[in-house]
Length: 140
Image 1 (cartoon, rainbow, N blue to C red):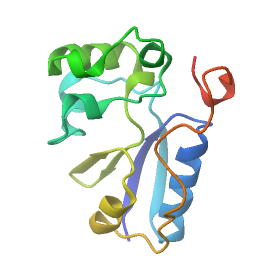
Image 2 (cartoon, helix red, strand yellow):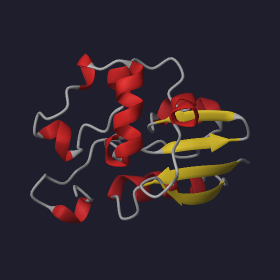
Image 3 (cartoon, rainbow, N blue to C red):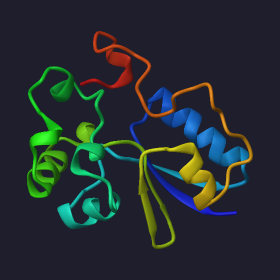
């Protein structure tokens, strides 16, 4: 089994579910606060691999929901600068196992990468289930 450095937003319902799936598969999960991590653009960029810039973003972030930021119009450098300044924009979780990195929690991709014993197919584990009006989800 793997040791997973799991960068999350503490209190995020989906991050909690994702960590439970990893632990149930026998992985050691080391939770880290994505919002207080000292991100540098180069380090953050490595998590996104071949994903399109628009897929780097957390679409539940207030600045995106309010139309203040349009991810599809940003260059890599602009996106990284915004994310370093405002980590709520970063698609969660960011995960690291050894030298391999991943952004987001596509269950099939995680299963192929490190293995999951339980695939929860009826629940969207990436989109925030709360609305913008419910601050407990961390839309601050």
